[in-house]
Amino acid sequence: MSAPPESRPRYRDALPQLEDAVFLTDGGIETTLIFHDGHELPHFAAYDLLAREGGEDALRAYYEPYVSIALERGVGIVLETATWRANPDWAERLGHSPAELADFNRRSIELLAELRAGHEADSAPIVVSGCIGPRGDGYVVGETMTADEAEAYHATQIATFSETAADLVTALTLTYVDEAIGIVRAARAAEMPVVISFTVETDGRLPSGQALRDAVEDVDSATDGYAAYFMLNCAHPSHFDAVFEPGSGWTDRIRGLRANASRLSHAELDEAEELDTGDPEELALEYVTLRERLPRLTVLGGCCGTDHRHVEAMCAVWPTA
Image (tube, rainbow, N blue to C red; front, side, top):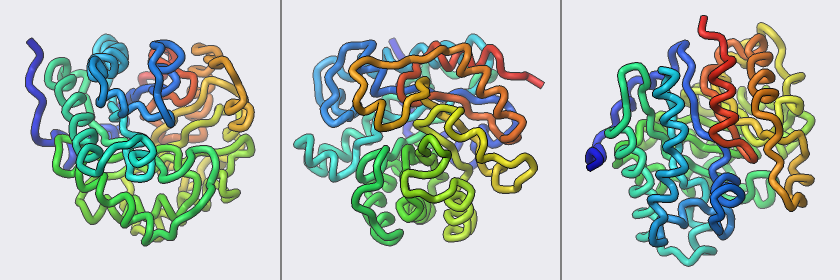
């Protein structure tokens, strides 16, 4: 019988991944569930599994290999909820009411809290993160919001997470700065730690065209540096390695990386009919190479096309000293 889920956050007041020790996170949950596990995810919404019989078991089976790797390697792990699409616009497309949406967000945290209660060890702390996705697409900017509009839009989901065992919230695949600023402000109002992760194109810039350095600095300037740290996602390391200047202060704000397995552009990935999983060992070594330019890089995971094999390869080659 599994341990009951926790009702209170464990690490909200002191995130352990802010230390120098390596932490893992998961890979491309949607691509894994679709291409490897055979699940249909309308609108790429993994949280929709919670509305189906056996959906919780499917999500638990997705997370368990990552938890096992962390335990075997004796490292921490940040587990992200399956709620990247669990915001009002996407829920409306999926036919879920606001009350149902709030319940899905809460249940996604309970699932991870249950995994933590049943598996966490002193050598492998498990941090529970409420995942927030963009209002629109994670590849294309599309219709934008002001920072105030973004704060109001994302506040409900963040407030829901704040009442659970979530230790923090993490916003993934953001394409422009104003939405990031709004999310950070909403998290601060809810007294939640927050991480911001930007999507970048093959030129290392955000889909909005803004330079990554400017985006990080603009978010920090507008929010008094409230974000715990920044991450990059949904691009191959070869797309952005050149934008980092060794010794630049802004690079210290980047602690996490969730790269794609594929070297293809976002447009090419959209048109691809088969999943490009790349080479796990090659991707892992490219992460290690980035360590010289990103001295604070400690949170290692993946995005589209990656799975537990890629994360295990990263952990295997990451320097321990």
